[in-house]
Amino acid sequence: MLEGYLEIDGKKIPRTLLGTSPFIGASHFGHRARLYLLDLYRNPEAMARVMARSYQMGVRGIQLIPHPPVIEALQIARDNGFSMDIIATIRPESEDEDISILSDLDAKAMLIDPVITDQTDWDLIGEKLDIIRDTGSVPGLITQFPFNTTRKLLDSPVLNDFKLYMVPLNRLGYLMDCDTYGPDERAQFRELILKMDKTIIAMHVLAAGIMTPDDAFDYLKTADYIDMVTLGIASEKEADESFSKLFKR
Picture: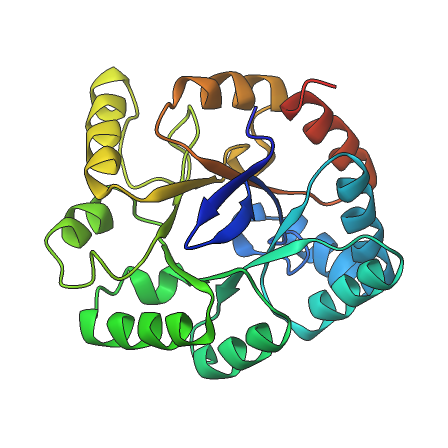
């Protein structure tokens, strides 16, 4: 399930990515966010061990959020023989700096952060997508509002300017912009995503840890429009549990 690579613009892109949102203590993890900051963000060696174990489990890509400690951890992992292809997130307010850093790191793809995407400032988004494309990386967008933003993107002038589209997706509809996520909403969402005609990356598939890997991946199998997945992993144990089930090892 979601093993191997896709070819996009002549680049081999891994279908499964190690997500790094736990590494930076992303707010959607609630009370665990501070623990992640203490245990991971301030400890690049610990992050590197998670990267190494994920690699050993078969993961060949990383959804890199380019905070300096995370980049340091990636270099430690690389120095120890665990080299992952970078599918990166461009952070708001440091887009140009991030693009330069990630170009130097030979990122296969760069995706614009949802803080930017969901503002739907098409001129700004188009400008950043052009800069990403000029580096030779595959350009993409991330949204936290997959219903609302996707509808707007379908009528936008940037629709043909990106190849990758990362969206939250889980059976609960958690961290998605819908009141309920029953059969009707699932059908609507599938229709919207298929109209996009992009390579789709699913995120938040574990609903920030609310869902078990078995439950999350069983639902993911039903989403025939998903091409890739990123999983935020906070420990070597989580890497073992999640990726063994995803790859059915």
